[in-house]
Length: 431
Ligand SMILES: Cc1cc2nc3c(=O)[nH]c(=O)nc-3n(C[C@H](O)[C@H](O)[C@H](O)COP(=O)(O)OP(=O)(O)OC[C@H]3O[C@@H](n4cnc5c(N)ncnc54)[C@H](O)[C@@H]3O)c2cc1C
Image (cartoon, rainbow, N blue to C red; front, side, top):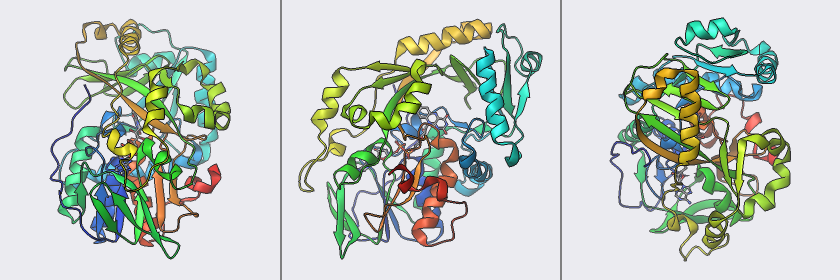
């Protein structure tokens, strides 16, 4: 069962016009809407299902700089500052805690990856540090694992995805944003060579600019307009325990499990070493673009061909604006949790920290991420469709950077000087 978010006071009437339309009420669309509303720019967010119903409420809540691409670090550092101010900004504690993140290595090869990453970001001046096995035991006591070492960033942290989604949505609404649920956008309208509105299942909405923040659906919507956004879906399973005593407040990632403390005193656990890759037509169409990633992650992926392939085909890739779109057919992408992977994670974790042998599972779920060939998102204009900007492809690590990503998207839409360099996120790099 997927996590649910606290109710949001959304609207039911579709306005006739606005300045900015945002497609998708995930954490990216919501943080962009909050920023625009704070700047008094009229904004309407259209969500095919529920606010935060897909990736944004299902993620682990890690807010990390550790192991990010160097080019992505300025955004992660800006996001840290924005998370620290979030409770004051939205008037609710969203569970942000700067409790640190640690990755631990079982083999020399795994440790070398962390060492190489640390060298590659030396000039950034992060507080990340390598740890010996003894230091790991001091930070995370009561363990029995045999670690080669690890890497630890005390200024990394976590927040609660469900609290963040509802609080940011409610704050955006309080500041003037309009959010509609169950309102799928079927496509874009253009006039004089520019995007001039959207067609929804409830009618048309005119606007000056559109931000597409549709997560794993952005590729399909753009595809219907002849634009190729190369993203592939991967599914990750998660479990939450009931409140229990744990070894640390630090979020810990090992090669075959991870855990972090939940605000209610339980733990969020996943099998870090495995993701489900349910093959779709897109894997065949885009596979070669992802070969370097596939080679590096071969052991991580559980590739399967079956029902998903045909379900995805049935959804269709071309439709007319006056007919039902794929977005109405799947209101909320809700994959079944892979209990085998979840049990694996809990078993591996219990072997390393035996206090987890008594863990009681309260909830299990899965979510599907949208991965680009270089694992970085696209945030910026789409040259072939003037008036459209994109904020998608967050590749499984967009919750942590979301306040900064949303602000960058809002800067680009409202003509502000971008508060961080948008160059690493240009769409054209994936052309
Ligand atoms: C299991 C899991 C664990 C993760 N762990 C972490 C983590 O620890 N840290 C981290 O930083 N990131 C993590 N992530 C990634 C993170 O959750 C995502 O990068 C982030 O939530 C992406 O937000 P989004 O708004 O782009 O996408 P989404 O949350 O998927 O939102 C997109 C929204 O757009 C809507 N939509 C799409 N098309 C249309 C349309 N045509 N009309 C109307 N609405 C539409 C969808 O219904 C959806 O609600 C994890 C993800 C998963 C699944």
